Image (cartoon, rainbow, N blue to C red):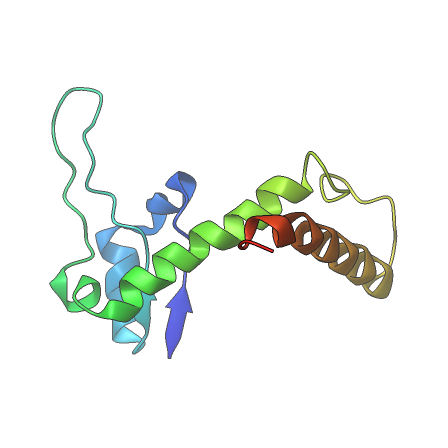
Length: 115
């Protein structure tokens, strides 16, 4: 079973020893961004994600895909209508979300390659 948690800086809070231990005990492959950066005092954090997870090519692929997904949501908030929906109901909100994804893909088409 694979459990995907994002790669944005705010998602680094999931890199704690107890959270990682609980998910590994449940038999979950954890794809969490490592939080091994430098603190304000100059000390280096120690990540709970070790080489058992980061050595696999799927880990790096998962983190790069997360960056691509974040770009879609990042575009949809200021340019699309994803910041605050004015619709009610799952079907209408889903339709609005799909419309934003279609618009994002139309914006991306010229950047994909030479025409």
